Length: 178
Image 1 (cartoon, helix red, strand yellow):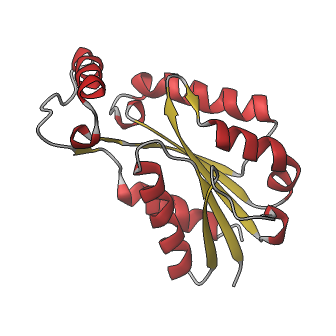
Image 2: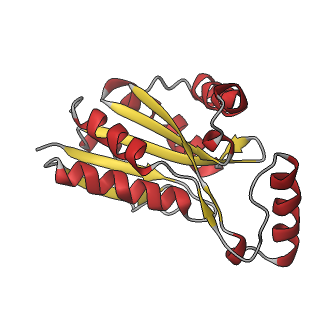
Image 3: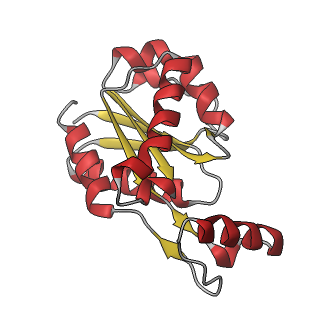
């Protein structure tokens, strides 16, 4: 059994939900997992004490959360030495056409290049539109942005675009690296 750190940052909660699912899959595969929000890490967190590390963040306004950027920069030597994986969450990643997903692929690749991290595997995963949790202004802005791309604009409900089978396969594949 391996010890695995699943570290994530989230703005609206979908990345946390995905991180939890990855942790559950790894636990089902027989591994001991610790789930940590990068914005509120426990004192003395040392990724070097783990056999593998999975990191996740969502894309907002063209970049991943600062807490994950800092976590990766602070621990890149360890991340590059042990089995590691990165998942990036966004609405754009849910587009069925690979050409439409290219901008988030570029953001992911730029993030890895800028931080000096070379994970063993990566995943672009669709996020969620949580209209019910947005304030009036954000709901209005998200509806306009999503509407321009032909997306779901009924603000009376939420939409989840996460492909859970893909997330679970990503976690199982990572488990084989441990």
